[in-house]
Length: 97
Image 1 (cartoon, rainbow, N blue to C red):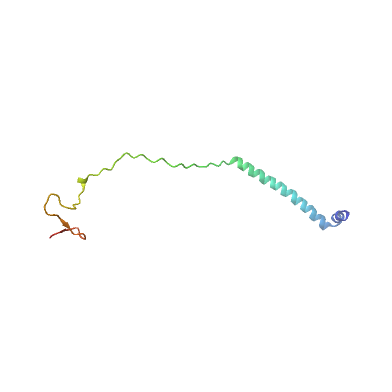
Image 2 (cartoon, one colour):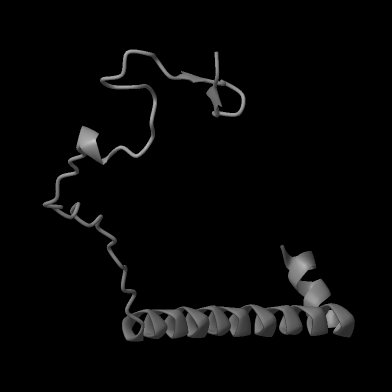
């Protein structure tokens, strides 16, 4: 142990590195404490707000679709005539017999 301590006190290069490393370690501790304090103060000043999105309730619709058979404008056959109307399936025109 004496040889180890004697090396630091006799050699100026080793002594300079020892002093520099101790100063660096102390400054690093102060820097870490300063950054930690800054982060804590920032956490107290910043409020995080979260938004809640809730689905809307379905709208009640009060309507009713009613369709009468008499409103149909498409003629598909004959009513009351003795002879049936024959339609061409391709063109929809009336076929004559």
